[in-house]
Image (tube, rainbow, N blue to C red; front, side, top):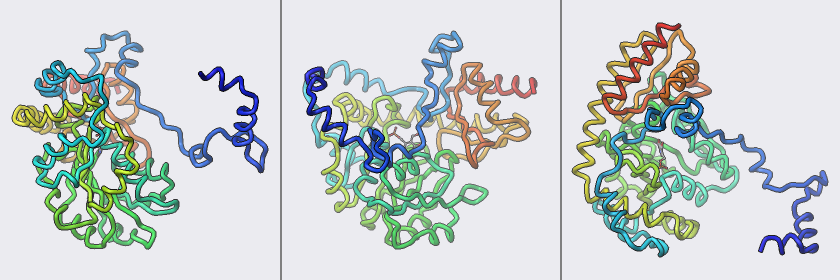
Length: 385
Ligand SMILES: Cc1ncc(COP(=O)(O)O)c(C=O)c1O
């Protein structure tokens, strides 16, 4: 019992000694490298925004995290309703799902690892490969987790700015490679810019011998993949997720295809029961219903094109091309953060940024009626200003 532990004087004294910094005599409760990290500020939840606005939760329009507005396949609900083994721990090896994924991806099951979202696989990869001071090449702007987690695992992010059109700056990417480079992150399509990374460039970077992590979180929306290259290169990791195309963001299930030498190490550090039975069931049920999911993906693709056209009619927005389920826009003549705030006041959540993307906004694709509501709100904001 905790109270017994706190009642024990000796244990408390030992604890105090451990937590004292010998130089300053001050208490140090956590690792110094953790104290130095920038605090994480999660975006406001739809529940909190609904409460703040006094709006029913189902009136909040969530276009900030690239989720599937049509939700999961009905087979997921059926499978979860019929499942009767919630009282047992999950299969630590996720063997059944990995076999199914091996067929889906055209690779061996032993190459696949399943994670609590692909976020967890990013962590497990960095935890397995990085010694303090190792470098990780990251072309920005991109998914912010790569940089933050590289720092957390005591690596050094080597940031390579993309070109004005958000393509890779290949000479700069190659220049960024040093003897301390352990890996590089490529995202295709890239989040938040929506563009593909050409296969020829990925191959050129693979040929340097550096470990290349290609994040294909949005693969199903564009159908372009480098998965076949995993048969050819033993320095390629491909990450995928069920969060976006399969409508399972809340379930937390992602997977990766890994070179054998790295997979073997990740198995050692993976928490045994990292993916819940519910998530495993939901992922398998999604693979049973790929045909239905493709219908919803097609609706999202069409709606993305329509939304992009309509965003282009807003005079202060300049939308970029995209092959994913979101559109990045440059905001001209108005403060992007004011637009973000005004939309939130209307119950519409979109993504704003700091740093080099301060003047940009990202809109996730919703249903046609969601796009219409968004457009009406954006027009009103324009008139107000
Ligand atoms: C490029 C990219 N990778 C990974 C993720 C995380 O996915 P998951 O929900 O599987 O952790 C996201 C989510 O936004 C993403 O955009």
